[in-house]
Image 1 (cartoon, rainbow, N blue to C red):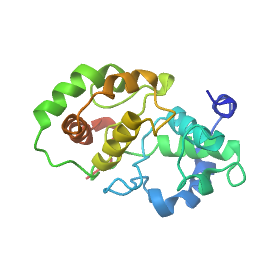
Image 2 (cartoon, rainbow, N blue to C red):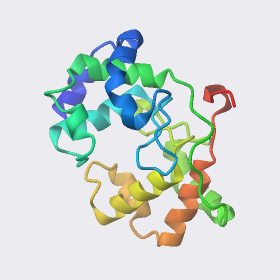
Image 3 (cartoon, rainbow, N blue to C red):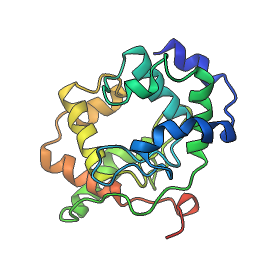
Length: 195
């Protein structure tokens, strides 16, 4: 657990200050927080502030390797208050509907896996759980989720929740692809952007 995460979570984030601070993030994650559909950069709009804070703090503390992100999120670049502000700003954004989706060839298997293995933490509609740091997966890019599942299986994503590690460690590639595809199609209508 990151000491900085605990400290940042105690700060009150300000969305208007977050909009200013987020300008340095837009080159990769885009002005609307949509990231890139090919999954190179994740979709962040509508993500729980607590999840964003945890991930950034983990990168800053060396608990999550992310060489692309570190130069933009390092302690020498962004203050703890700015992290809190950006997180609140992104949390309040609407989730884009045009995220990168999978091929749609194994959705029945993907649904079965999601309902059995993922729904307890990530929710019926991919809404996650802010208090437990379970991310929103609704509206996330297929390729990004597939890459993260693969990295967790390989032990490359060192800050993954141990429960998730246990659940997916024996997933064959076909199941990783199917569940990622299904998740890429989840949407929370009340949090979704207009078409």
